[in-house]
Length: 474
Image 1 (cartoon, rainbow, N blue to C red):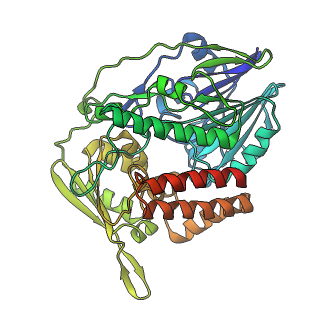
Image 2: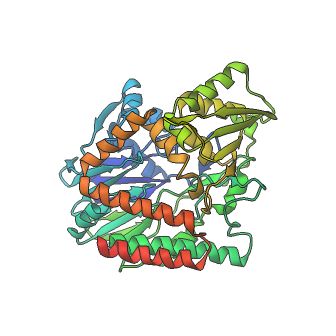
């Protein structure tokens, strides 16, 4: 068979008589300090194909895509990586003895007689993979948000008679949603399970997202992807109410002539037919935070406070956006002051954050520079202080905190203003025109979010106008 199959969370395995390529194989392990568990079993046939594949592509460093426990079982693979600036994944995997190749951006790489692949990375340390399987195009966007590569990808899609969009869609729990204001009010709307009104809100949200991107990319088919997990820690289990049911995803209306396929399929590119895969659900028990080494009553030790302070104060540009960070660990409060200066003296951003978090996972995140794992785990509670605009969780953290810490400082190992400028310049040089268009668009969207409440009629009108203009401009 020449074809592909989708299974697990964000795994697509491409076959040319034998398995050739598999992507982001989370086949075991409990990501985000045990907060997440696998939602479905991987059937034995598909698991064997993952093990047999010659190549393994890893999109980014999140543990539901590149879990250490899974890597240990896949050590014989030739690993393909995006060309991320900073090269952290390349360094980490090479040091562990893996056979690693960095793919050139926007360049086809032949993997077998009937399979070739093209990777595109972006400044957010995300990446996408285009795979030509026997003349059919698989567009694996996994978790990525379009950041300047959309026009190019649309052009490639237009060259194929049959194409498949594999992309994360959902109610939003795959990011930091445990965010509250100073009054303790959650900055995310009530869960779909709260009421019929809440269910209607989230279904409309999902319908708008799916409709926009299927209309934008104009693929033949769409396959729900990269959103199949469950919560299992007792301090994050409340997020399970925000997990998008598979039935809701598969029932969501597409646009642009795109047809929705089931999430788990085996597609034959020679016959242009598919069979549904029906992996069994995993109904795991709720586990305690302590079973993953987290004891909420444990305070930080003196040397750990110093490590925590150095970690955040080493990121120069964070002080331009945040005045201080407050950590509440084991009932004790620790403040990390951030100081931004100019020729006229100290500058204050007028905003800060408080984190209530257990000691063990916090210090692991600091030691290995993986603060995003705490955010996505959603057992850490984040409180906003000062002026953060009107956006809701998780978007409210993006202008001033999340990307600066987790994408640039942690993933790209960029810490100073000079390093940050060179970092963005490097991505600009790869595709100057696309980069410029995207940055102009991005700044406009951020401004819109800061001025208009996301639950207002004006916001929805502006969103529709943006959707129309973006589609036409591309």
